[in-house]
Image 1 (spheres, helix red, strand yellow):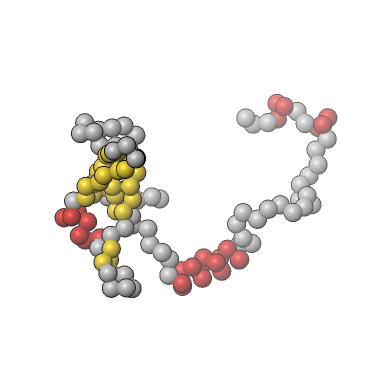
Image 2 (cartoon, helix red, strand yellow):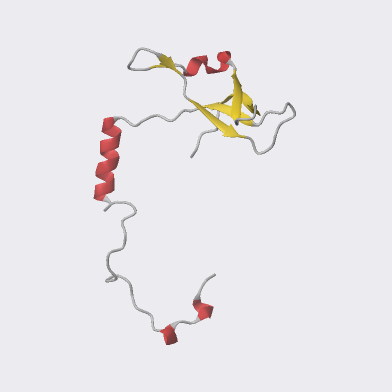
Length: 113
């Protein structure tokens, strides 16, 4: 289930080159600041286009990007589980499990939709 977005700013299209200017409330993003391996501090943001322009002319929204990369252990568990289940999205390579139906056996009234 997807989490609700945490909106921290907004923006609007500006100029003739398709620029988008955004404003972000520093107070709203401070608790989402993370220190990376290079020692710098970052906040990951998502920017999306609004369905409709709001009363202030804002055309875009800004939200916290809460996506977290899985740890190596979590990824291995998922990979092992996928192997155990036979994989996801495997293409059908043969028709050995598909029963053939003759035209005279098929009745349109038997189709549930």
